[in-house]
Length: 459
Image 1 (cartoon, rainbow, N blue to C red):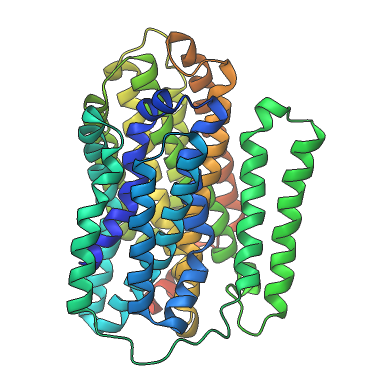
Image 2 (cartoon, rainbow, N blue to C red):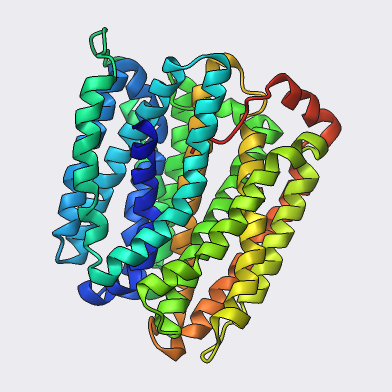
């Protein structure tokens, strides 16, 4: 039941990728607005994950799960009924809020319900949902969008109703009264608004001008807000994030690399969806089927990550993974007005998917390994937050570059999409160099892994 809830949360990212061209045409979205269909969800979801985890501990896990599920369901209905861009973005933000409440609560329930080997198996299943969500999401998105893009939101309603009934019967009631002290509402609000300012500055940079005063003020204001968040967290008795833990090279360096890896893989899905549908003229279902090789390649990379890092650490494997991803993005940068799926898209899709699948899981291992028992939830939340925020920023950057050609559909849109793939290749190359420069060597990291064999991604 809890795994189905997490799958529903993940599907609302990947399924929407497939529906974007149909949705954008129906609601007449401009280039800078298209990305907000996804980022309004992932921004709120990612920036409030740490807060959601804290709220589950203090207010009650069952209460937070059911409240989050209710908000997510109501916002899904509002998304399906949206007829303007602004109402859709607000509804998607509501979905992100609900997801940020129910996802950490569901994971916390699993952590308390299982012990020892059974807990490890449950966490493995939780992690597998993330990988399966990509493949299932593109298929579900393709099938439903063939009829109407609004169905990708309507389908959440009966699933959520069944989950609510099951939760009331199966999940034990919270025994303690809600404790409001220690929630750190200030930190959550500051982090969310600061990240939102940065994403907004990126998405409107093309129209307002990258050198304009407005772009600089909003962007720098967001950066200043994050600096203030770091200062406040260090002075708070119950911080959402112990900022000093970022000094650890595996944690701090891993967080940067998670931002790069997640941004790249979110961008990979978005750009390929735009090219296949807007340039090559594929339908939603055909596009969904075309993404299956990418999902499988990413799954193979993700599955191999644990074995590779246990033998070779994270420094070398991550540098290699990002180089592989860069090679795939370089292949995809050759997409043209008269390209084809088999020769121009599939090879790069497979190579980049393999590299990024390996990178995302290896980065998660880097961040989670070495976490003390009293901070496992916080570090796990940081890992998940980095994944969602990285995806948010990646979509904002790559969609803005792709829209730079001035066309969103038709053969003329190919040049902008190709430029975005070039930028993605540069990002992956830089991440490879950062991995070599920042991450600890295998002889220092592998002993830590052996002391914490259950370290694994839980987003």
